[in-house]
Length: 164
Picture 1 (tube, rainbow, N blue to C red):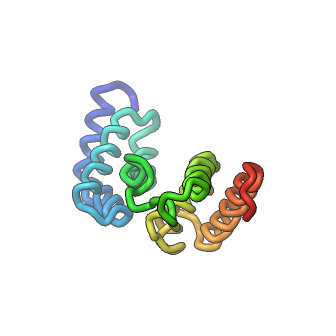
Picture 2 (tube, helix red, strand yellow):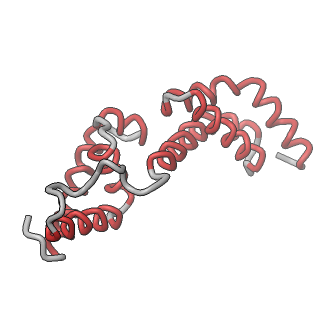
């Protein structure tokens, strides 16, 4: 897009034509109207800075909406520590507490492609189908990454001296 005025005019026209589609794409991922509005707003803010042509931007809008929604979902789900109810099993046993803390630390240290899937699956209760849809990957890829992530987690814990 040529200059700033032309860019704003082109984005304004795209907004009029595609605002509902961008919102619906975000809503499909987020299942929350308020979050979908936030994701859509992020898309339009990014659109103003988009370096390509208006036609390129038009083609990218669905991808931008999906990615903004996934980013927002990740931020929402990671906006704090692990869930409050994810406490060490067995109460006050120091050895169990130490193992639990090691598990949390090693889970956070995993590469994002494994950590995200394990957190969505085991901490947030998402199904492989949900995760596949959220991350735009196949269900078999979700299952493979979950298995590899668990194996990496198991190996890291074993290296720390935990016998699994």
